[in-house]
Image 1 (cartoon, one colour):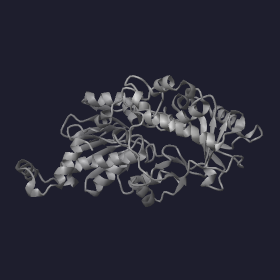
Image 2 (cartoon, helix red, strand yellow):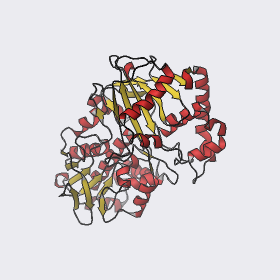
Image 3 (cartoon, rainbow, N blue to C red):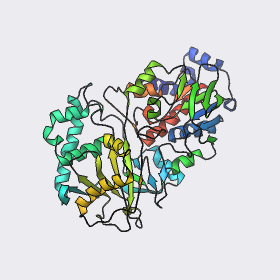
Image 4 (spheres, helix red, strand yellow):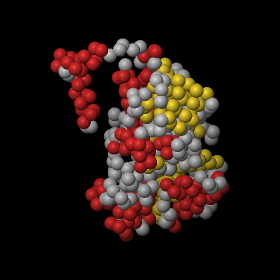
Length: 452
């Protein structure tokens, strides 16, 4: 437990008569402020901004949410154009026990399906089906390495550099390259920039994994109900130099007593919003040092299914990070013949300059190697381009070389009790997750509530 959280929790649990006189005097002398007289602007209608706005509105604050896109959700976006929910951002509830997303899913009407890693078949090049024993033994050995490699890490060296030096044979093994890609790069970021000391940081919730089947966007839509959300409002400047904060959006200016900046880390890295005065050096340093990954997702549909009746399919080509993992949507949508696959890191960024035809061709090379040249081409494809998306400039944060865990706290630090920051990149224990983003919004709302 962090020391300042311990102090805060301890003070809040003390009987009133045991509190120091100075603390009592401070509390008694505080002006009684009606939250209805206070306006809070939330920049960004992702899950963090919506969580903060909902809690503040329930406390009586006047809330204005400015969202650059044409709908709420931020990176929780769902495309239903092909008749099936394709979640462009988050898809899973990672550990349902104690996870706030679990109850939110129930309240919002989000349907879920338990995914089992064991329901999987793994293919090597040439369509060779790998035995479950070989896969499991290699996987166990891989997790052993992940559990200990940071002991030989170096603050100035990447995960990739240290791993390749320690395990040169495994670094060239196709199955191990798959694990590195789908188990590490997917969850964190580019291995050549991932910290060899901090790659395993972050807390996890226990319990099973569940995937959303009718769209993760049901949660932000639920949270936004009854809130004043102004869509298609791109914020360009935040001037917090005066008593009131002035927020410029689409050429207009709106004033507020407090502002919560809940845009993705990539947007901050791109300097898409001008702050006056400049943000503190500690925060700017954290923006620079924490990494921003890229993961792109691809949904393909067919008239008929030709693949195995399992939840997951893995393929182990020589190339890394490239269409090596497939989710079988038919397992939870029996009438839909669809696979979802992924690209990570530099290859994910490369796909954003490829045409749909080129992407499909590359995916089909792998599927044809697995199932034969006679399989049909897909009828449709949906895809993401997160790196070039001006509302995100990446997928989620990670511990890059040069990152320190305090940087996540620096990203979360408020300025002058007026300017607040939320988002998954501000949640030191649960960064890079939807539940981390949600918790960060609640955290920032609590900070503002505590000021009154």
